[in-house]
Image (cartoon, rainbow, N blue to C red):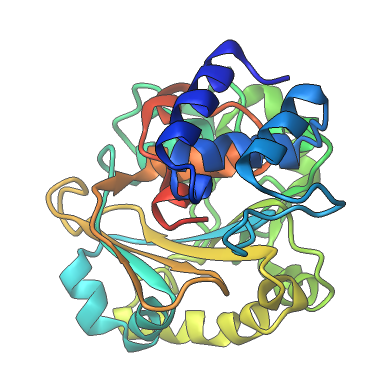
Length: 321
């Protein structure tokens, strides 16, 4: 049901945006939560009617822009905005074609806390890259939120030799696989934290998850390998993803971020690219971070953002999605 705060926000914001309510990010978030959670009770229908949307099996905002029901996140490594722009021409071409933010920031240092932030909305006080045995986290994840709500979730990890592998197997690095750190998630992790072997076939079959993460191995994520190598790896994956019916129909958004900048991850902004059929050369200058991405993932399945993500700037709304 709509909360008291939702009703207050709806009333106030519609008054200010009566010509097109969905220009307002708060209204978009409320509508998206109702839509994706299938919350078509009297209050939710009233919101839709007042906002000027037709109520049907797959409603969209009056502007005609659909909201993706699936968000797939690729995480690259250790490069600033300027480095990624100059060293990854294919990625930069996607940024120019669809949309990007050159003011995207890490929330911790080194890598692991940033991956945890995307998955769980917090760094959980972690300041190193140790394996799950050193950091058992008793919390939920965006993946578990999706599964609990009846949606799908998967994490695809290149070169991981077995599901939910909790130790390194070079070039697979467990610190880049955050699901493995969350102790209540073992069953889900064992079932849905998998290798990348089915990524492209899932895309071809329009079977990608509602909440998904893809982590290349250390050679292909620009950690040990070059930016050119990382760019070529993305170039081998993206045409299938962006050619899928899920993408061309507006159901799928593909996001590419970097865990942090070179050296100290928080020292400089990084590049975030959002590929969505409704975007065309969109440039966002808002200071965004991994918590805002985590928020978007939770809200995609109608769930409340986790921990610090609850107060972060919503990345999806900043791109109008």
